[in-house]
Length: 172
Image 1 (tube, rainbow, N blue to C red):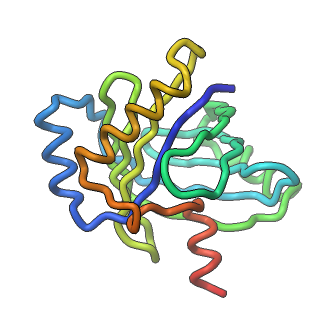
Image 2 (image 1 turned 90 degrees about the vertical axis):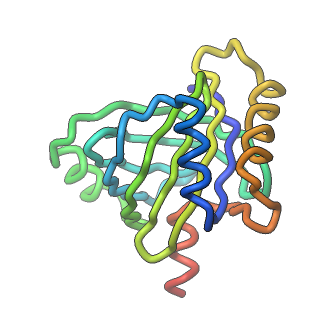
């Protein structure tokens, strides 16, 4: 398990953010077309991510609150075969399916996503990641807040819940 401090925000300035990241010479592994299948689990959230870059079974605990928040993550890289998905669907109820186009960038230990989510619109995510437990929560929070400021993300733009929760709310 590792610690992330992260934010998600609605964004209407994705080209500004993209240009900022490119000027900072952020590592850009590419654009991932992802399908996240969320499952009903008794604790936290669990999703199977299928993409052309990232494929993983992800379980995490995160508060639904505004601003930088701690997320405790267990990530299990998977093979993009359909067997795991079939097994999970046969054992668990599917809560939501989220489809998105995700631009992925990295600066040091900070990961950035510029997302176009089907049915929801444009978002930016900032994840300050401490995979080895050597950075600490305070430094991660500082990193997250620094990039929020650089990207001109305002409090009103912050999203407190996951894409699956947003889709569920929009359909009910």
